[in-house]
Length: 145
Image 1 (cartoon, rainbow, N blue to C red):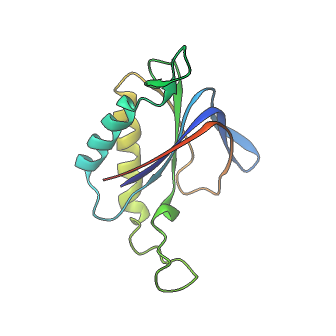
Image 2 (cartoon, rainbow, N blue to C red):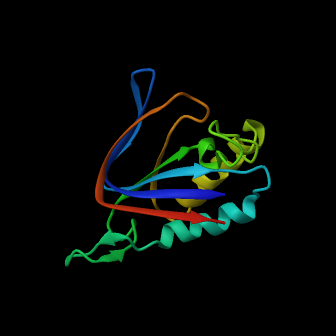
């Protein structure tokens, strides 16, 4: 399981010209899931995400969690995070979980993050999405389990 976390001033997801979710300040999280991932990885990374201190405090230092900063998290499933180009120029997605495995684990991860008292928005699993984000910093963190 892999998270790409971007601190944002705002972010939204649009599907077929309809905004399906949007947040103000917080994190835009791209979530990649492999076929070997389980709820154990989701539990670990959801807790890690909830405790990640990359929001600015009153002095501008990365010292606050998203909850401390009264922010939100927008979580978008992204199988392409497991694109492998070692064998050529066209990525192979063999490591990415099949939708029937990834969707339940994605939903579980979202609910786990919510259980920490954080407002969470989502993309639409499996849809062609357009993401609009205003990065803050920019600050981008990669966490993989």
